[in-house]
Length: 463
Ligand code: UDX
Ligand code: ADP
Picture 1 (cartoon, helix red, strand yellow):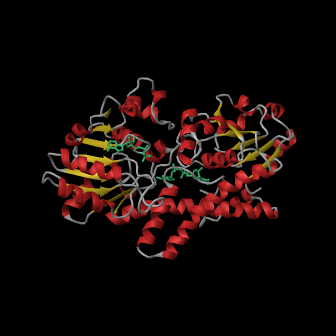
Picture 2: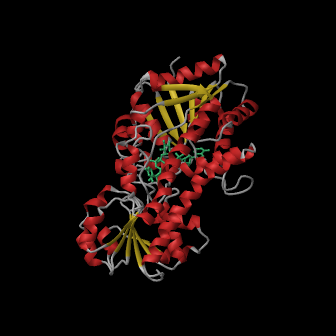
Picture 3: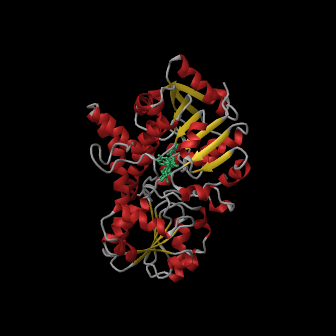
């Protein structure tokens, strides 16, 4: 069976790019992406493609090709749900900030609201696909809500987790390592899997489309991220040892990465991983393990997060220590605020935690990031801490010109690995800074010996 219309609830970092590519590759299917956030939808519909609500290399081209043809962005959620044969749930599932499982379990209120809404407005059979990262067995809860509150029509639930990384989302969607589809083993479940498979088969070779049962699919998503995050924490766990002993983490990473059993990817030492998935998914895994009484497994995975928190704190401590034990009233410039390059997403970025720690010490932070707005930086900080907003405002400012941002700074911290930082006139930056001009390279992005030759005091991670 081929379907003609898809609705996606949630026009965020996952729903937006995923649906754009699905629409581009399946011109015969009408794809409507809906969101309750009218500003976000207006931005998706803007004529000027540089105004799309999320920055993602290559996304503008895909949207330009499909939008208005078979790709639509709308706030009319109910109408789009009922008109569709297949509905993707792509709403946010942040870590709970209240009640049972606070700080660990996923907050499923948006997912539940979606399920209730689908049940309420649907008048024909639907395939409902969970796209957001969800803890194992959520599909069961969604199915329960749909079956018990719906109008007696048939809902089939699939799990189709996303594996796209921000900054390379379009590339990841166009040439994925694999697509994972989980469904029930009933005849209708298997049929639903086939329907979704046909959509991806428009551009993904069939042998790269893996099908599993629902629970395996849900758990694979969580554990894929946990394994990746674990690699980052593992390499970061060695950085301190390198600094103490004179080994160089870049050399160590290169040496172990050439062992094909280990491989070169995800071995870049850093200020710590960020992003909307890693921490959330691991905490989810920890919570599930704890709920089942698997305390050793829970502790094992929790250590990945503990290591990551330590790496951020260590970075802030190093800055304070190098500036003679006090940063009060000193200007510290951050290059980068996003959680990684090529995205304007700042969720769980190390920048927020490092800024917060330095502001506790009364430092003045000025930030230059090519894609993140000043408003976003302020709201990230306000969300994290209990300082008054005006206090945050007075300690954190942003600057659109990187050279101005560096002027008079006692220290410069590279937080995000934006390529453009490598092409700057570092002599000019050195001349404008307070001496000794310290660079703390949280991404090992710059060349240590070149910077030292200019006169900088350079401190990388693990070197
Ligand atoms: C991740 C997964 O990669 C993706 O498959 C999943 O679907 C969503 O979560 P994303 O969060 O966009 O994607 O970014 P990713 O590239 O995985 O990086 C996560 C964090 O780890 C970033 O802060 C990044 O800077 C950091 N990182 C990554 C390192 O510090 N070192 C590395 O070697 C790799
Ligand atoms: P992700 O990174 O998972 O895509 P985002 O926060 O970027 O997360 O996007 C999720 C989107 O889902 C937001 O734009 C939010 O407004 C939208 N959303 C949440 N709940 C609903 C709902 N019940 N109906 C429509 N849209 C919703």
